[in-house]
Image (cartoon, rainbow, N blue to C red; front, side):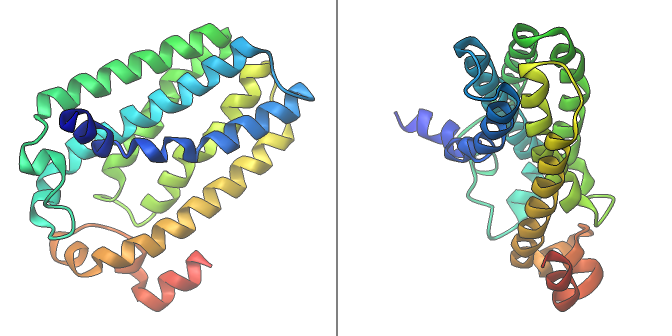
Length: 208
């Protein structure tokens, strides 16, 4: 049971519900009510599996930095409670589950599942190269309502784009605030963030 708890903590599974309101609200609007049960099922599977894959991959990429950071050194990979190879298995399995769920929705969701994976997994590297990493995280969640809209019926319309933009700005804003916790560590280790680039006052102004 403790091992299961380690895996759930590794990917912060309780936060998987974080993206679901954006998914379900976009689907509800497009379907003019609740979508059919099968669509609901595969949308939830897709949202949970891709987020789990992204979180596990982020822990893999950050494991050496996490081991150096007093705030994160007790995480599962730095302490060895979960082996890196197991985290890779989880990442690949959940990525495959995401692609399969997308295929069960429609052809466009399947086609877009691959660039979506690039966005979500690629976020893990952005803080090494740009202070815009907060926007990249926002985009990772912001594509969820667009995906749900397309899952109901493959058509590009303005409502999910508006919701997507709102999610991007909201997530980027609170991620900037979260970065305040690691300001000194990030400066010392060459990690990019709005806090490092703009200072605390400037970063908070941007986040608001």
